[in-house]
Length: 304
Image 1 (cartoon, rainbow, N blue to C red):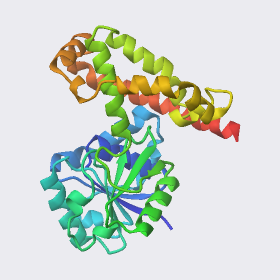
Image 2 (image 1 turned 60 degrees about the horizontal axis):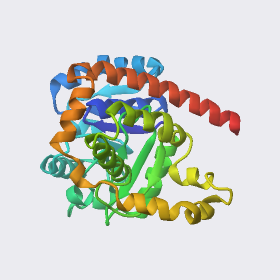
Image 3 (image 1 turned 180 degrees about the vertical axis):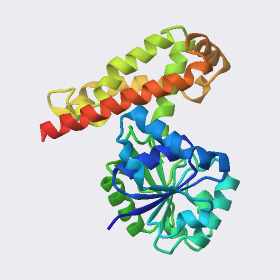
Image 4 (image 1 turned 90 degrees about the horizontal axis):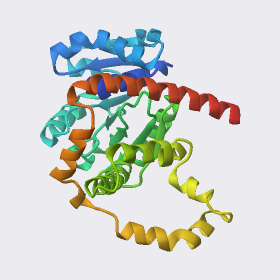
């Protein structure tokens, strides 16, 4: 039986989610509150496919609908991609909870707002969760599944299974926490990076090279926990015994929120490409990420 997925909000993230579900063979029902966005969707989706190298034939199963109610009709899963504004989220989820069938899961792509902040006292709050992707989700597969205190366990089970079925990598969290997992990790790395740059210890390019050709090169293949398990002869326990005190000292001296300063922003603005280059650089990034994703899948298949 073909799955029916509703994508609500069709900006960059919504379009990328559409590609994820479409290439998995799902029927897509798309809606955006802005008529001009709805009208442009076929061309924008085709362009997204072209950049990432996806088969445009996968887009034969989507419909752009004029109302939220039409988009939700018969949907098993709703992927919401609205603005990161709590008032907008609360209004939208109140509407969706009234309209969607009781068995429909309502999932938000929110990168900052936890589900309890907009699910509130809705009758269907037990079927609401955050499914936070990494931009762009059609070429970066991890999805953080974060429940509210009211999200039912069976909803989390269904969410995890669906994400695996559409070739994403679900990370199931046990409870809400500000920033989820990825953004908390990213915030710590960014704080130390900005501090090192503002102190003049390293240039922005040097910092990026350290991550891209150093830590990031390893982390493409395995996470930091698996990495340290291979970095000492006796595995992770040996690593923590040998290097734990040193790493603890460095962590205690690392930058925190104070590193996000106007001074660091000025240095970066002078060193980085300007805003006018962002669209073309984003397209180049997506092409390279898509190529990397294809290579990693082929490599994993060979390893197995």
